[in-house]
Length: 253
Image 1 (spheres, rainbow, N blue to C red):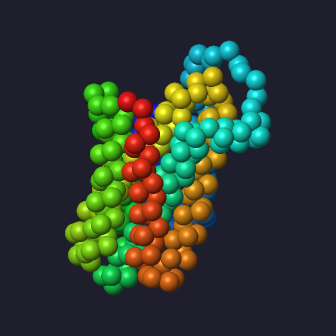
Image 2: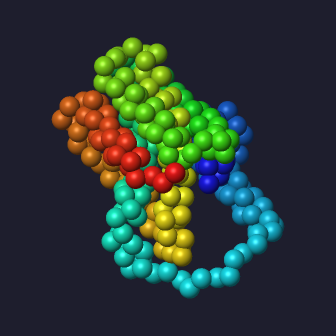
Image 3: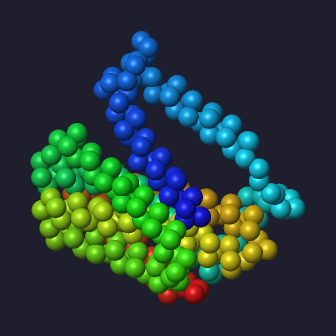
């Protein structure tokens, strides 16, 4: 799961640069302008589908299909609902950092949007590094210990964003969030699966539902930033980090 997140992080890191090349017309346009991005992404998607189709995969004996209600019933399990909320916080922090980091630089340092957009790339650089290193570290270190270290990195980042307006401090904080948040999904997801292996279909469906945290957090961050500036948005993300800190007490070794 962790190495899979590393591959995904590479795509997240490269996609904005492909978009930039298309939007600035530095790649052949074929008369399409910035719309050339759509056929580029289409070709990449088709190649991925063909490659996956040609990959031999040993399937387990098919389970019965799990319905929406079957997934939601698992929320009655105390540990599963903690995992579900953990996924929500992870995705909320991920999306929240992408949208808020450039705004913080623009608000505090007066950067232009083009200058501040580097913050998003910086986040994905360290998220990619975190996923790759996590795939190695988790072979040597317990999930619980590595999860604690990851959450402490994010908590330190939130403190830095509150106390300093220095550019290098803000960049350091963004890097810490990227590294700290890189392995949260894989650890929480695996913890949920290991707790009820006989319900793996339902758990997988429920955990993926938790991705809607990526819509809840930005909404709350928007309200908070309107009231308090970008410190309000950081406060909302800090709430998610504090929850993940509490979740570390429940992780099995």
